[in-house]
Length: 341
Image (tube, rainbow, N blue to C red):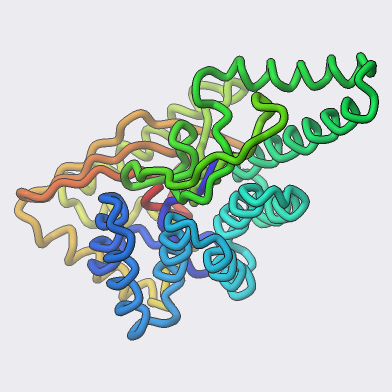
């Protein structure tokens, strides 16, 4: 099961903050370095003056999960779902935490809520499949405990084991409370973070166990049924957005966002645009690279996930980014932006 470690920087129907406050960027870097205690101290100080910042609240849940403080992390994500019921990532992370505790029914319900808010959320669909597979594995194992001669149960359990073994090494990591999710099944993250959770003993060792859904690798996957020209059109729009950013062409950069892209934290669109203009114009030079993009297209909507290399002057940063896009007229425009993994 995938865990969303991306910083949910969003406040409303699918609007994710593309650029974190400097304080949150610092916290993110501390988390990536495994300095969770220092990160939490800095984040608590930030929340003292910004108590309604949903991105900071989400990040706090991530850090608590990294520290294996599962109950506290669950409380944080639960509170976010109550305040912002249309955000899918908190539901996804709740599911990962519940799965880590063996509470698969709660995990299932959380994932179904995530999918209800965003039907194209590929990570939630994949995690839901893993939850069902784990529940089936447990049921078949119970059937065999009651009747060792039950060949049907033996065959079905073997099929599940084979299905997940065919995914390759590390494809079925144990449930983890790490926001970075199982190391081999990353969703959105800014940098690899050590998984501090030890796998629980499972009677059927190779049965699939959901791994943490990282907040936000809303992991888009190439859809082979989608015409390549449509996928290419989406990628062209993404590369044009990165090119405008790199060339410090503010007008073209802002034109890459749909009119219904709503800034987070209650900012007006004009205030958000003013902030972006300042951040783009301030550095002497900017270089933005889009690496390993994956595209999932459903009708007039698309999700693109990729690694982003960002350089501004002497500063550089690699993050994982997910763009939610919609075709408006003849253009693919950004409706939501998630930074981190």
